[in-house]
Image (tube, rainbow, N blue to C red; front, side, top):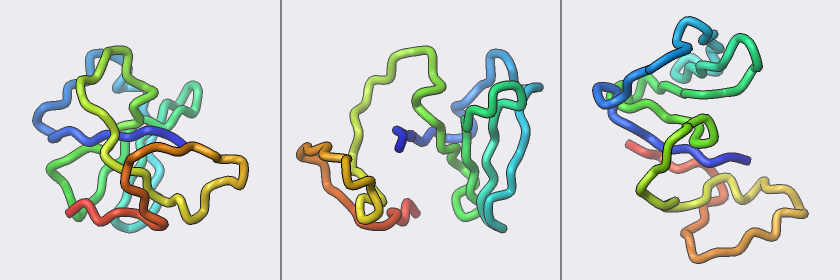
Length: 97
């Protein structure tokens, strides 16, 4: 479980640590970047949406000024997940394109 956000590729700048990134080719269309030192997943890129990066929000060290828009994959959430809110929920992933 995690919180993720998207940002236009041209609006994103690494300030430090980019040399520590390793890549994992999850699918033919999906690449994940993670820290080679601690293993933390940081960014996902999708060939279907090359103009955006999808960021693990827990990796940010600054405040963000937006709120979640939806929850996805709730059809396979843990039985102990009793999180309830007013956000739209999707049993599967959402097509962002």
